[in-house]
Length: 440
Image 1 (cartoon, one colour):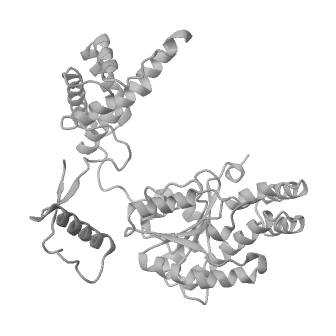
Image 2: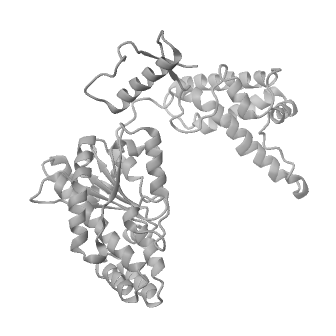
Image 3: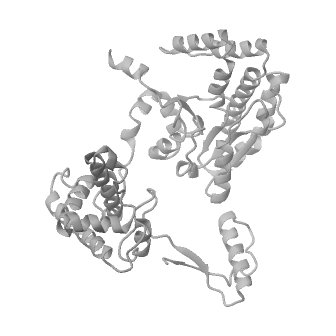
C-alpha cells in the first residue's frame, strides 16, 4: 500500500477545510455559513427522528447526495444506504447529532459579539428557507471568553455535554452554538464537540492547533477556516491549504524557556516519585505476587506503606532506585551536546529532594494518607502536579480595608466584579479597596 493510501484509510481525528467567501463582509459571510450549517443539522435531526418513513428516507438521500468525491465516499454511501434500507434511522441521527453543537473561534471578543448579534436573524431566515419542518424560534448560543467567569464557563460546558433526547425534546431547546476566543483552547474538554469554525486565522500556529483540537476527540470532527478576505496571510493559507495542514506541527515557534529550567525539573519531581511508587513498584509487586496474594498488594496510598518500603529497601537503595527512574523520565541520559554539567545539576536536585522525602517520612506528624502527607509538608516539598497548569503554589487575594468585615466583603466583591466585567465607571469605594496576592 502506498503512502497516500495509508493516509486515506488510516483512522482520522479531524478533517480540515478552508472556504473563501466573496462579495460580503467577513462577519456577514461567517454568520451565513454558521446559519446554513445549523439549519442543515436541524432539518436532518427533525426528519430522522420524526418517525415518518418518507421524511427519514428523504434525510438519508440528502446525506448521500451531498457526499464529497473522496476515496472513502463509496464506503460512506454504502453504509448510509444500508442503514436506510434496514430502517436504522436512529443510527444516522446519532451520527448527525455529533455535530449539533458547533464551536466558532473568533480572534477577539468584538468579533464574537458581532457574530452573536447577527446570527439570530440570518439563521432564522435560513431555517425558514428549508421549509416548515426546519423553523425554530431561536438558535441557542453562548460565549466563552476571558471575561466570562469560570463558573459560567463550567455551566456552558455542562449544557454542551447534555445529551439530546429527540423523543422528549425539540432541537430548538438545545444548545447549538458556542462562540469563543482563545479562552476555549485551555481547559474546555468536551467529547461532544465535533464541528469547529474559525472566523479568521489565529495569529499563532500553536493556538490554531490547540483550538482545533477541541473537536474530534472521540469521533471524527471537522475544522473549517473562513479566512478574512482582506488578510493576505489568511488568503495564502487557503492557497496552500493541503501543504499547510500537512506540516502544521513544524511551524510551531520554539518555547520561551529551555528544557532544563530548574523550577520545571524541581516541580515535576514529586509527581515522578508518586508515579514510581504506584506506576512501577506497585505494578512489579502485583505481578510478582501469587494470585491469592494479589489482592493484598499495597498500592502505597498510606504513609506507613511507603515507610515500610523504605525500611525494606534501605533508604540509600530507595533513593538510588528512585533517582534512576526519575532521571530516565526527565531524559537526562538522552540529552546530547554538553549535557554532563546539566546532568550533574539535575541529578543533585533529584537526589536532594528524594533525601528530603525520606527524611519527612520519619517525622512524627507524617501519618495517614499520602495525599495528606504532601499537603502537610508542602513547605518542604511541592505536592504532585494535578494538571499541566499546576506549576506553582496557588495564591489567595484578600482585601486590605480598615472597615467592618461585611463592608470589606461587599467592596471587595464589587472590585473583583469590576475587574472581570469592566465598565466605564469605578464602583463606589474602589479607590479605598486594594488587593494583595499572598502565597498562603
